[in-house]
Image (cartoon, rainbow, N blue to C red; front, side, top):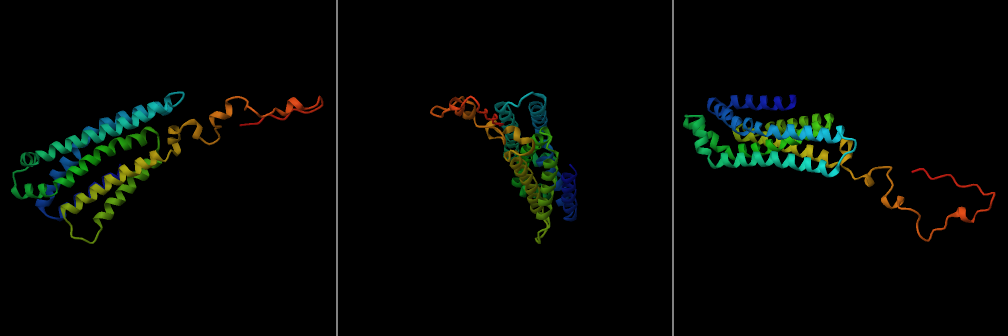
Length: 238
């Protein structure tokens, strides 16, 4: 969380440097584009709890149930945030008018509103992605993902272009894109705790299914033709 908070703090500081109007507009947009997606935190908590129980509380991981938890968690977070972003965007004039009476602040908010709503949808997906990493006890990946997204945001802000609200919210978008992308890539890698999502036949050291299906037809057992003094071969260790 430290990486995320530091990115938020830097963006707030940069907005304050732009003046009173930009700072007020940033505060309004932040409340709409980030704070309101706290509703999606419930999806992250549920995903984290269910996945942790499936991975560590059960005797054996059920692949179908694990994949279902992943899909439902991601779909719920992205679906809720997308619906919220769409509804807010369609009613953007009334929403902004209800939060500020200053016409300059309203104009500044509406100028970056598409980016704000994009960040809102991405933030809703980032919650369950982080919940997956936490539920799998993949602490190192969660930390690396958060700091990588923080660095991506700071790199956008460090570009040699004039500071503006549009630039700040592009930095927010980069933060959430990297956070979601890195987390999903970690899950898709099937490494670390995510080896539980592999099928048993694909795990290292596991014999293919046909290896235990009994004797192969047409292959003679050498013990049947050995003499009485022959030594039986040692069993093959799998």
